[in-house]
Length: 332
Image (spheres, rainbow, N blue to C red):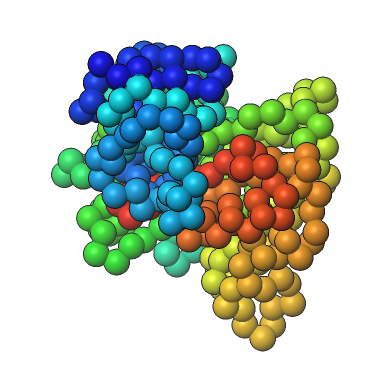
């Protein structure tokens, strides 16, 4: 049975037919993850020595990353003893995922193709989450999709989701044509490791496209509630969409006046006088100090990959880039 060792010194055993991420979970070792299907790269780690086998294509890695020895722990199994450089979340207490019933308490249109859905859990439900995590929602027909949680406050046992319509999507058909208040659904969660790490004295930069603003919104709400000793040095938010209607939230209303918000449109009309193009390019044009920055990016896979590449080239440590990519038949 292969031994998996991390550069931090932690080690655990693994069967050859399961992923490194699953082996870590069985050994109660917490590694980063999100989609678990090789597309988002949240579980990226570097193979220092040993041999691994890809259980399915690693779409979430570029050719350059593969050549440099990076692998995705969610779809790689250990063939021999291996040494990995990976973020170790030891010391962070994550909530245990569980299946719970819930009912729709509100459906609100935020944009022509985006709705906000509030899910109400039973009053006695034993559930809590870290802002930035996501849940799986099981629809009436058994179809399951993943959605990021958009709220930080859970006192009322209500979960807020931002859901975009996808043409031909089985769950989109339900949300936009059939769902009604008081419908009974099931959720499984919370899931994922996309949440704030260190904040005290850090320059926090948030990048979002489309409904990728949902977990960012939850994180921003949680920052405003932090004690002064844990407050970041600065907070910068860039939210991108194609047209103005894609920016469906008033970010200023949920942030501190110390936060810097930059809306970005890639296909603006003539009346738009704000920033244009891709959010990662706009960020670089601001010339941020990346030496003490942590970047949290959520949205399209392409944005995640491009932002990671250009920001690390500009001086950001790869260890300080955290992401949650929305993938097909996954989150949103």
